[in-house]
Length: 296
Image 1 (tube, rainbow, N blue to C red):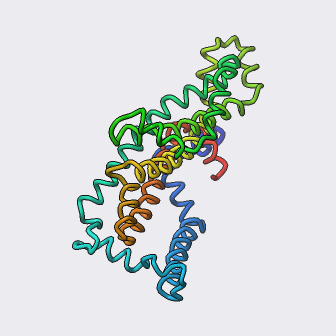
Image 2 (cartoon, rainbow, N blue to C red):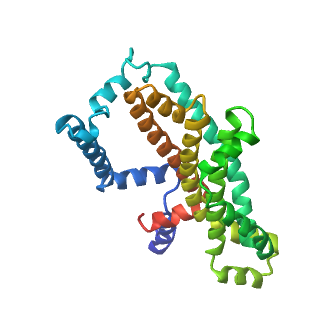
Image 3 (cartoon, helix red, strand yellow):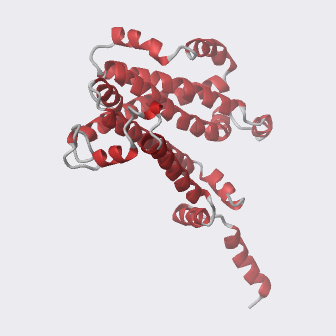
């Protein structure tokens, strides 16, 4: 066998970055060999130990009305909870489902409006001159200031809550998409022009891929902001949901259920952000491959 021929055959495959399932295995194997997962579990354990010491160990006055971790976990996994809410009760799962459903609707609307809006604001200076002042005027208004207006504008419980979550998420999505377009190197546009690309081709093959990392960074922030505003709205005008569960538990002095709902909210919020991050990796395989070649 010709050694040169063998080298040519094997060389490209050895340089190809892993993709799909093999990329997952590569990252999992690389992650296990680093300190990241162990530090993560250590951080959670440290938080639980600190919480236990402040509440049940040293019994600090500041924490004397807050339920301890043992009490919360015991109630959480109980089949017959003292305060009527646990992993085994239907009401607990109903509140999670309702909040997730609202987030899905609000986030979908904000993404479908905010991403195109941000792209066109970055693409067209004229359109940006008209719309950017409006965005910057409305964006600093706290979401709680919109609550009375939302209640006046929309009837019932559901629509005002979804409106508030959508509004908060929309501003973040639009602004990050706009910044993504602004971050694209001008040389790409000049190169596309020299190759005779039409404006629509430049938009699809330069603007959209170039802004994609910023878009998905914005979407991760956006889904978190949507949760903030959703919980605030559910506390004020909700009938179900994790925000309603927190406020209702507080009003009835069910502090164990309140802490349980807060921890659940944090976990579900982390899960939705991870899903957005995963979707971004799937849609930006070119970037994932480049990072894999760099060993990241």
